[in-house]
Length: 438
Image (cartoon, rainbow, N blue to C red):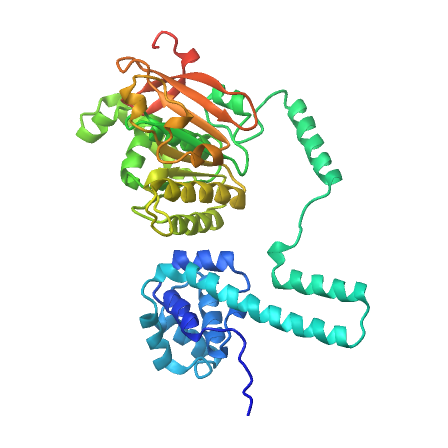
């Protein structure tokens, strides 16, 4: 007797991803839900579909996800029995070695889901072919079925008329504003004139050797956007703590040297300056997530969550080489390339500018020369993925003059800008405003 073959499915894989969700890794869960909108359909087993729906509902409601909350949700819906019962729920976390593996499991389930859809589509098309359907109608049916199975493969390109109108509107708007930056301003007028402001989807790499001021420059820009422009800014800080970065912001905004803040040897006028600065910073839509040793998948999940929660206008990542790849690779170049390309893709996905800091190779220090694009540490793909690359260099360590060399500018000219670095208060200014200092 011939047994009917089951469609492609993997019950253990479904258990593993559900177990990952129940372990409570919310960022991983959010990443999976953002990337796979049809995830419920990926599950072949009805019990697993019911469990996933409970997980999804709890996540959407910003409630914790674990065995107890999912059990309560299913009980409230009268579906605990359909989901296998409490004993089955309790067994699922043991099926997952880590909550952070969920994105990998989701991709594998998606492949099985697409295979099932293809089998079903082929069966429908075969039936139409046997029924004498015309070639044109048959081909249209095939294309329609394939587009339904993998809509991300369907063309979604605007017409040239729409693109031309958008460009003309941009040009006219720029003319009306008489050269005023139309993108997000940085607070450094020379940089804003050169770039016309930071645009949505742009990846701005700031490269420097340790101690040259790349974190300070990024923090100054974040401070300007959040406080002066009143736009939400997210900072994913992988090197310092959120408190350390906040102390720098207080010093920068108040003009009180960090050393005095830490030692407590404050002058009478410092208290008034600090009060004004603290009030502005406390009200600013600036959100700092200090993380350590996270993978690019975890970073993307964190960024998407911050973007949804705070409606970010700018995201800063400090710094690129501290982000681990999704999977280790013997080649450091390959690892950094994965991180770099993923960050560019993230900027386009969120449609906001991203500032990402990068270390430079030691050779620029050894050779006593100004750094170039080849000095971006570990991978040439950083240069390739970036829209703008700014390289910081201090020609004379005893003077506050700093060069910001815009070594790559996808939408405009390259130029070397001169800044003045006030090290005691962690503040960059345009050099033309302080010629006597430089």
